Amino acid sequence: MKTIKFLPLVLLFTLNFSCSKNDDSASPSDNDPTQTINQTSQSNRGFAYKTYFQETASPETRKGLVILAHGDNSDEGDGILNAQCELLAKKGYVAVTTSYQNPTGTYAEINARFKADLESVITAAGAQFQIPRSKTIIGGMSRGGNNTFPLILPGQEGVGNPITDIRGAILECSGGDEWKGTAVLVPVAYMANKVDPTMGVQNANDFKNGLLENGNGNVAEESECLIINSSGHCSDAGSYKAFVVEKVVEWLP
Image (cartoon, rainbow, N blue to C red; front, top):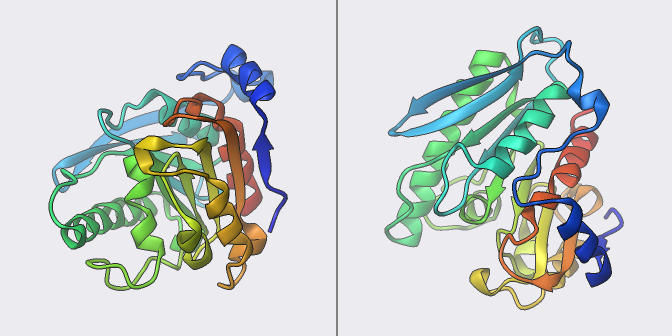
């Protein structure tokens, strides 16, 4: 497994000073005026999603597809996820921020509905931009990431066959425990406060330690964690962008 990135509290203060919740700053190269990034808004199965992509790209030059689901009290216009997707598009990826149907019901019902929603976006965007599932990354923030977990774990009610034919998953302040770390079926990029009362996380290092023991394919080797030494829920999500982009570029160069 890659070296785990653990941010001490001193560095956290620096991040808070330099990165607001909706920070969308980019390096000069990322602001290349010759790059034209298109945004399209679409709806499917009663929910909406937004797609970022380079207008001049072709199926041969598109590097992959990244789909990120928002958390509670947000939508496909989520500022943090949109900033991540815009930067990914500048680097040659098709990036999607997606909503989904109302996440209520039994565990099995929620899982089945969320999987169907996400699969519909994978299918639609994959066909539109001619990107195979093997070059697709899924995930999300808060509930969006937490609802992704069952899709990449074995034996979850309502899921049927887990989603394993993708490149990886991005999990931003999405909960997680040691068992999930040992059991996830695809590589993950995991971001969290060390303590997250909202998600019931007493120590995010438990998930990290589980990943170190994961015996599924290349999961342990290709997964990486960014754990911020503080308590809160998505309180430093504005500082995740560079880590997200770094992992996507590593997985889909």
